[in-house]
Length: 508
Ligand code: UN1
Image 1: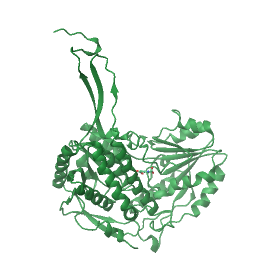
Image 2: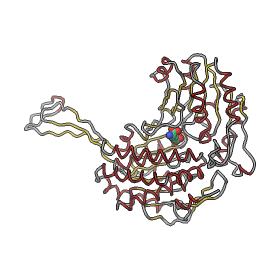
Image 3: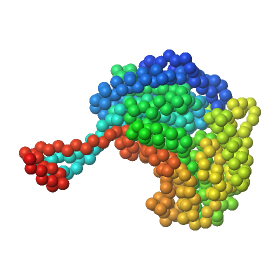
Image 4: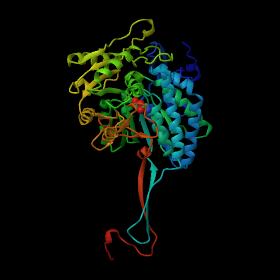
């Protein structure tokens, strides 16, 4: 396989894992990155130690003092230039994402496109950090609110979106006047180094301080330094609900702010009026795209009993046509899982499915042979299940699709809402009453609710995140930027006499 992109992105030099802007810190311990595509060791990055961590924080705080005073549109100009560089490196970065993480090249490119889009969005937003003005109840008074930067924003990102989710946070955090420290997943460190190098070039060109963009690498303990550190004003963390519980508690204990984007258990309701031919690609992409490792992956298909048998056989034959293999080969639909541990989780879930009475409609298996030598390739499978099965309410980060049957639309919505997670949801219907019910206050309880499109592949323009065990955070579009700033209410008296609010008289 040609791996020129590794050279072009310059991610294979040693000691490249802990960065303060332009300079890398020299630590001894190395984090190894193995590709799930072919099992090869593709690079090593330094693990951040506590001394380097403190240096990073100090640099970042220093940079904040300057950065926060730069007019927001000027900060937007920096983000615009980052977007331009990403446009130039889209192919190489898309390949690295695909090779280090295992998602298809098309999806790797899609991820870089999300980065470019959020840079464009944030650039425009840098002129729109609006606060409200209010009418004071007192004569000669003016009242308004303004938004100020927070300080350091710590971003903890997951392996499944090794670059895009960081960019949703970084682009917004920057235009809002914050500096950013990134702790990426230890499974995809090279992606973070590649992106960091791209941003550093832009910093250097603009003579901006190093600490605006920092990178620390290592396992959960490195993340824990940030979550418990008062000097980090906001932690935006993406990952499992288990991780989010610890992060949320630690940050709350020190009255820090957090944005949590955690597990999903997303369902599509398939109604009798739905146009199966039209919606099938959305169902398939939701279930097998990224090998079922998106937090928005479709895990449950809730099908009306009148179309159940038909849908079942359509899906069974579609699954026979799925091509599994090297994700950089565009003929393949599905690449590997991230690592052997993920394969173990897949196998464990399959055992639970059998124990709990699920019926396999497309059998699970771990693929063997030369093309699958990394040992991380698995067969996407379909299970005939019941909503009451414990495994159905758990999020398994693998391509396992549960088929569930419903009778009334109210029952379908109640099944959809019966899991602890609340990220994404969808209904496929041509019936307006059903669609509106699904979107109403009595409908889906998720942060994302779609009609006639799947659960995954949200656009950056909307606020992204979910309820319940998904953590309640919102990132990316709409007014998510407000979470990266602090609101200040200002009341100014310009009259001759002092007036107290609420009509209070206080003659002194
Ligand atoms: C994630 O899986 O953590 O909506 C993010 C989607 C993508 C982002 C997923 N835009 O599927």
